[in-house]
Length: 159
Image (cartoon, rainbow, N blue to C red; front, side):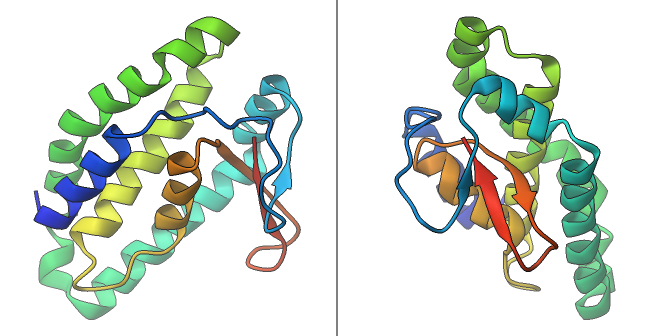
């Protein structure tokens, strides 16, 4: 694991996630008012498709720029899961228990953090983007959970 990824994970580990859900503290994003709305948004087909598309575009750029490095993707995914899965479970446990949040919520957070790490691992080949921007909101205590408008126009939805 690259040092920049270790640093990213340490930064995420050092803050409490979801402490500002429900707080409107930025004009840059749209907000949902409840956990129910946040879960509905993060489990939507549109959001899932957008996150998958962001991953696919990033992977395509890696292949274009360095096919040999791209071949490390699957082994790195397996390696990253060993770290990201326990971190996500630790950071989501309290909010999941308090709000009876479904597995889909945990899966969404895991996808975000895993792919943030992958962007970090390959940052020397292609700069981080979509998932790095998601991490910003986790660090601010919010939950990024959807998109309003046509991507890339429009804006992120957070709780």
